[in-house]
Image (cartoon, rainbow, N blue to C red; front, side, top):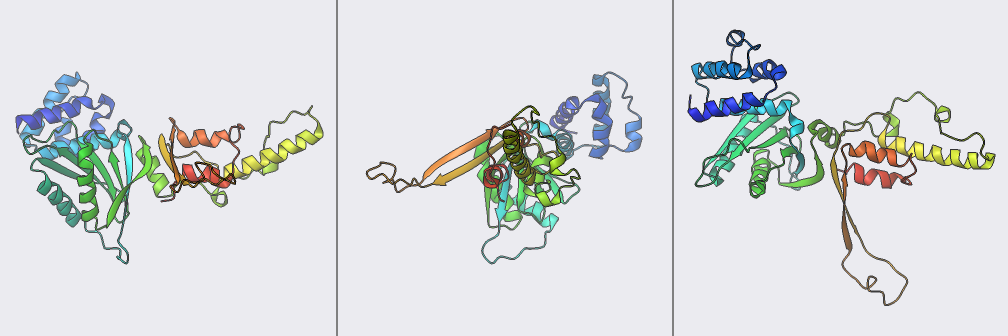
Length: 330
């Protein structure tokens, strides 16, 4: 086993918490059950790592084997990355092709290797038709940096891919080209969604969340829910407040449903509109170009935070006001 491979495996194992080590090594599926039984996991971690490296040397672990271990670790610790969403589309009149995993892998790797002399690509298939891709980038003159890779999660026969954010932004167009061609799509765009929680992003783009009023399972009549009213208030004010609170509660429930929201940390909403005015001579009224702005949302749990605004009286909810920025139409 090459020294660089041994060092790569060693660094990866050192990152793994001891209480997860056995689980991740089994998921890696490189060392046999009998080999793992020879390891005393109650020892100091340095001793455990040395023993595991010797076992990997006996099996002559390759760079790809080491990369697969890193993928497994990343799958267990997805939240340590920030994920962007990309959506692909077919050309006009193009039919949906049957997906061939082997063909996809070969095409994806070939496109990157033709453009870059030094690049390593590793794949790991998982359940739900997902394939994890790990790309270690190099240049024409330097070897691939195995410690700053890019990860892509692509769901076959869907137009969606999720990419870990990377400082190597110059490689994003090439990566998009490889994804588009290998999956037999026509073009690719980056969506205005970003989060550390990959499952939440998946729930949003695949519409797996409970959003519409018709699908929630609430059994409590709206009139029976607590509206937080003061019993000493004037009856006319009570009635007005009750009607308004019921309206806010109904629209919020229709928009978000009864269950917890996908955990999204960042979202962007692009607005483009033309200025209208009855005043003659207005500078903005004569402007032909539309006004454009970009609204950015950020929160540890963005959707739950926005859901709580209307009931708290911080947002007058209309269905369009709540729906558009939170759940971009994909």
